[in-house]
Image (cartoon, rainbow, N blue to C red; front, side):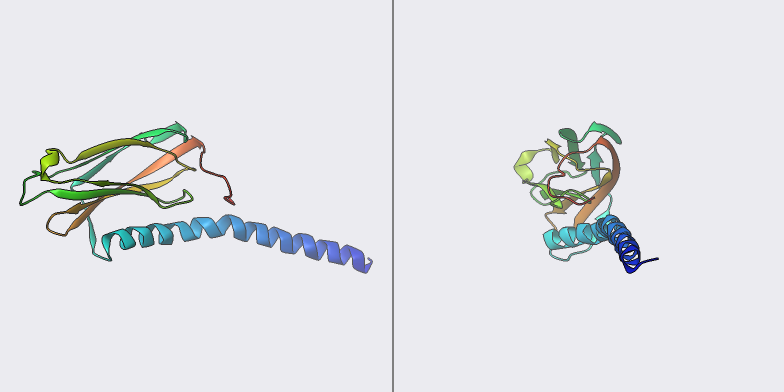
Length: 154
């Protein structure tokens, strides 16, 4: 065997290792980035599960335009109401998908919109209440045709 063959093999082996690292790295980093985005929005406050309902189809054919609704169990009175709702995702290029500001005059703590989803991932809706508490709901969504992939290595 000549030294050129060894060099090519070594190069191919190191390239395969780098390729595997690039595929694993985004998946491993995604939950940490999602938690960091939620923590930044909540100011580091504890986020509890419950009171929020994130409504989205569990299987999405096309990630380019996905209908989504969020509702929060709240009487929407001056003393007890939702002040904001935020939607976060695990795998899109930006973790912060949407933010809505509400007040007691809204009458109903519910919002709807359409979003893009890069790939199969978790979505988290978080509601900030007038008493300063934060509540959430997490949903896993399977996307068969991805969107939002420009510049992404996956």
